[in-house]
Length: 217
Image 1 (cartoon, rainbow, N blue to C red):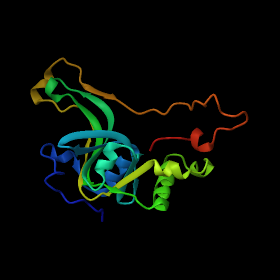
Image 2 (cartoon, rainbow, N blue to C red):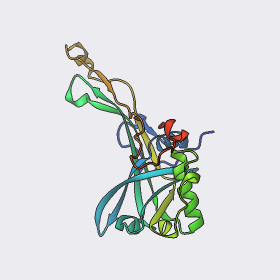
Image 3 (tube, rainbow, N blue to C red):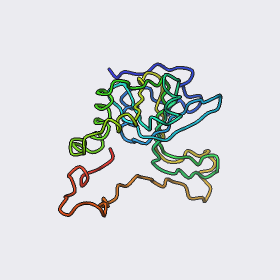
């Protein structure tokens, strides 16, 4: 049986309930498909949203940044809202009201916890890099102590939140289908381009397989 998150007052959809999904399988699929996220928090009574990269390990989501970051330091042990969004298409209806977008998104709520143990933090960062580029971390120059000190890793358990998904064409008022107005969908996709080598690469250094084969899920 598919596990679902509880529907809370914060996570439930007020409108278009059919687009809401609370099962972990759907939520995990969106998180795994898009590493770019935004983390919202409150700092001195004002809202702030910080873009960063996220990765999922089981029922936890993690993100990282500079240890000097005011946002990350204030997010520690604080309530945060993490969101991931993927644009799949522009939906053009026969009226302005029925223009929309096809998209997949996740909104999670929870308490951000700092990964304190240096060995655990190193393992999380290795998992993050290798999750995008399999085998890359072990090819790199070993981290200096200062590298790890300068990097903060935060995470939270995935236990409150939802996914919101829209697919398909426009849904117009029935009488508008008789109007001579073009309607439909303009698909949008993220495209991975050809890798561009650093001009300071040493002669003879070959492009790794994980670069040649890189794809987003």
